[in-house]
Picture: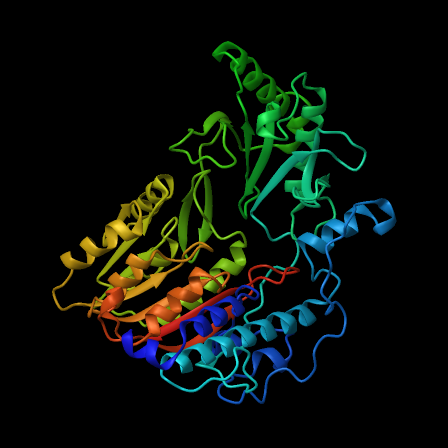
Amino acid sequence: MAGLKRRVPMHSLRYFISMVGLFSKSGLLPWYARNPPGWSQLFLGTVCKGDFTHVIATKCQKGQKSQKKPSHLGPLDGSWQERLADVVTPLWRLSYEEQLKVKFEAQKKILQRLESYIQMLNGVNVTTATPKSESLPCLLHPIIPSPVISGYRNKSTFSVNRGPDGNPKTVGYYLGTWRDGNIVCVQSNNLKNIPEKHSQVAQYYEVFLRQSPLEPCLVFHEGGYWRELIVRTNSQGHTMAIITFHPQKLSQEELHVQKEAVKEFFIRGPGAACDLTSLYFQESTMTRCSHQQSPYQLLFGEPYIFEELLSLKIRISPDAFFQINTAGAEMLYRTVGELTGVNSDTILLDICCGTGVIGLSLAQHTSQVLGIELVEQAVEDARWTAAFNGITNSEFHTGRAEKILPGLLKSKEDGQSIVAVVNPARAGLHYKVIQAIRNCRAIRTLVFVSCKLHGESTRNVIELCCPPDPAKKLLGEPFVLQQAVPVDLFPHTPHCELVLLFTR
């Protein structure tokens, strides 16, 4: 990238990258926009490019002011429930149509900044990091709304800490910051994105904690045992609960007593009202533990949750990633499938594939599906889903994509076309993954799904589109961003998924 360094000062590029972090993703394609009942043409009948003159006529007036973090937490600042809603679901006071305006405008700004950076990559003189023009780097489709607006989460994680009344055995969501030492845990009963079933399980877990003789683990070095609760549900109403427990120095016999106590509570005690399908217990001495680091122990019930999606029956393990909005995920995956343009001569490469739904949903249209996923349980789920649904042309690999992908691509260098789909975590893709994609001539189409296009994800896009750079081992022809589709999976929050189509 020596030529680029001569044209563009690197400090300007770094500053520009730092400016790109805004909201997350959300989207809408014309094939979906034809028949969306009840949605205004403001969102669903307009596709934008260039000057972007036909998009949002007016901004929503309510809720536009940024919220300052309070220096203290007290009842005079409003009800605890309202204050929690303002933090967890900042857009909850707006109508959903107004929420979509806010999100669409955010995606527009992300792409405008991205366009300025792409211009800089190509030697165009850009005098400011914040563009004055409304030009976009690609075709921007209207936002695809979520089919479900309230109670849409299929997974919720509840913390344990001191509540507004000072009780340390309160189960809910945090207000305040650890830095300021003003953490308060507030029950989630009135959050619009949390299903009633999730809040019910959290309330009964709180009941259990308050009758337990063991203290909660609020800070690791201060002792305590009971920690967070994860609740997963499917569209059939089946419910999996996962309790995290710090064992401290308890013996195996003492641990057995606690497992039996919580098991009895949810089978025959007051918690039986939750009608859990399964209850897991994990001993964890860290903030987060994978199944490999500390196995999930099934105390009772079914080991998995199953979901119906895109004509597939999907198995989901307690540790596996699955989009938290099931109905929205179907819209997202259909969007991705539409953009890939796969055919019977195509290999579909699904990087960070989770339980493999994207690849498996397109398997019948491709010659082969290759999936890569870090979480071993998720790969086992993908293989089970493929076998159960009679899919025989899929292959899933467990491990870090940066270690697996280069060798996997070399084994497929037979001239066959490869379409890549990447759906990384917020941290983005490892630079070796970008190198492997750039340097594989067989990959002409790439679909990038991002829930937060900033930081490393922005650098991923930059390195996909930049001129060849031998110093960074980016030797292949650069990709060109062609289309962007925002898909809203997170109503009442500023976040959404952004699906980007690159070709070369």
